[in-house]
Image (tube, rainbow, N blue to C red; front, side, top):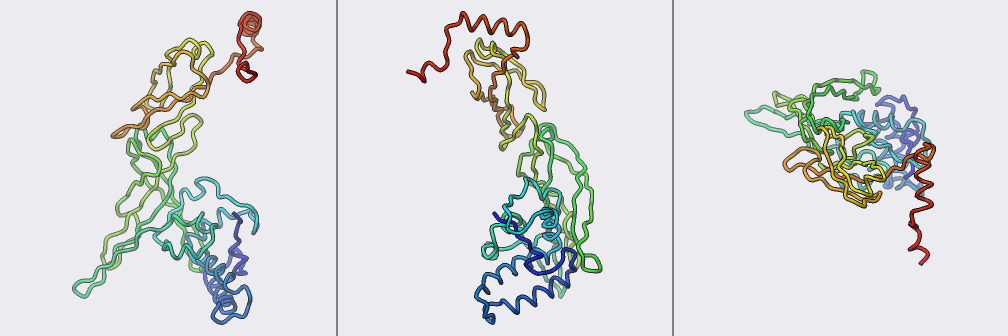
Amino acid sequence: MEFKDYYKTLDVPRDATADDIKKAYRKLARKYHPDVSKEPDAEVRMQDLNEAYAVLSDPEKRAAYDQIGRGHQPGEEFRPPPDWDAGFEFSNRGFSPSEEAAFSDFFSELFGQMGGGRARYHTGGGEFRARGEDHHAKVLLDIEDAFEGATRQISLRAPRLDTEGRVVVDTRTLNVRIPRGVREGQVIRLSGQGSPGIGGGPAGDLLLEVHFRPHPRYRPDGRDIHVTLPVTPWEAALGAVVPVELPGGSQKVRIPEGAQSGRQLRVRGKGIPASPPGDLLLEIQVVLPSARDPKAREIYETMARELPFDPRRDERA
């Protein structure tokens, strides 16, 4: 996927105001609109202009694009890093599937999941009332929070336009209760923390989509937890009962006799607690003592002389 420089597409500097962007778009649209333009690439150029304007005219999308676009050049190979948009607070300014279809894969990769429902309007007794828009944000949590539950301070960045029409980012901090058993992709709803209502209408909600920070040991998959379990050669060969440290406490697991590296063991009900709970999936990794240890080297040399074992024998048959 190629990186798109929306500022270059509209021929505006990166510190352009909202009015600068609007004027540049209108000027170029008059030149390239397929109904009036004689340029051979008018339709393609107009699609590019519409896409660039859809991003740069929206303070939220523009702030997110500015963050991820630093240091990238147009046309270079580009993949957004995982969770690049975590902590940004977006309101419901999404696009319908037909609108998104007119834009590039680059746009869809960055902004295709944003948006959602629209504000709901009510009239009655001559009064106009509107429920405030819901806001959305991706938040990163520690996997331990799913096992124990917690209250966490979460900071969100909310872009807006200042009086000069430039994007500024406000930060607000919320105390959020993380329920025990929360899973990746689950949404925590904070009532009344979205946009204020109009005409006395209720405020919208803030919807926090949960994602887990990378962990050196635990890999969540829904409510299941994957863990690599190092074992000694004798534990793998003879079988053993070994402890596995989990966020919820230590769990003893039986290693079957003759276990090999890569074998997976499933311990039901010991994943993320829920109803029903997830499972614990253990991938065995046989770890050899270092031959730099004199005792280990002595044993290895004895095995090499006296143990009739060749793991490559079947390959030569």
